Amino acid sequence: MWQADPVRLAEDISKHFGLHLQGQGSRAATGEFLIELAPVGVHPNESFRIRLELGWRSLQAAFVPGPFAGHLISEMGNAANVGGTVFRRLAEKCLAENARLTMRINGAQASTADSVSWPDAWKSLDLVLEKTPLAINTEDYEENDRQLVTWARRFTGLVLSLVPLEEVEELTDLNPDGLPEGGSIRVLVNRYERNYSNRAACIEIQGSSCLACGFNFEEAYGTIGEGFIHVHHVTPVSQIIAGYIVNPATDLVPLCPNCHAMAHRTSPPLTVEELRKLLMTKNTSSGQA
Image (cartoon, rainbow, N blue to C red; front, side):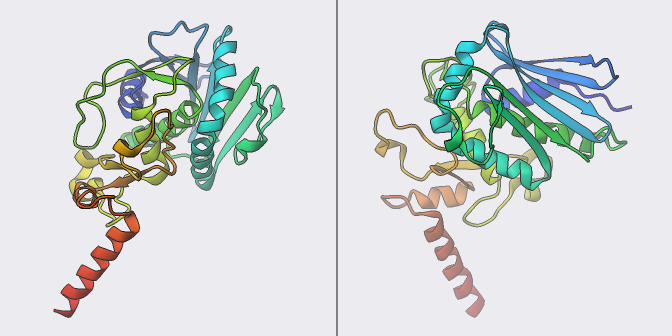
């Protein structure tokens, strides 16, 4: 019988978003398996948990704030001005795949599609995602794990789009895909540096296929290529003014290493549309030859 692994899931989500999470499993009174993911290094009373309830071919994810997390909730309301666009895009993706999202701010129903209508001052937040039917708790263990990771990432992305985050290491040495080697972030309430999380949100929103040529590493190389892609700043980092907060829904795009390198062959870099035109022109010329 398939059994979800809370530790393995926490490791995957931690690596994906750069936020160090710990995972713990338990059983609900009704018998469903529960997984709770919680940030490490923050007192649980002042932080939050993500609770995943795994039913028969169904999953429910919920944001669970600590009993003294009022300051965090207040800061999430402030961060909504920046993270609202990312939240909306991620919500749209969830809803397009027939998930149900329920959001309540200060006890009142809130729209996941219209962050402008959210109140300025937040005192409480309830956020729940329900996905059913879902290929989970089936005899296909590999697919069970894949679906769990997919929806855990999406819900975590929704939460982290609103949570204030801070870098805790110098992110100077980057891997080829633009993610910091060993970098991590933590929940905080006074800074909004979210490089690692932004890249993860970009991939969650726009996918891991190259937007210019369509290349997908998982399709070409199998599981070793799952989720691998470079993330390109539409506006070069060197030109971003101090204090500017990057919006991963509009300022970042996934590109394969080839297209990413070609984009930076000019100054300013080529746009995705310009890369597509170059590829189309080259393919047309080759076909005529």
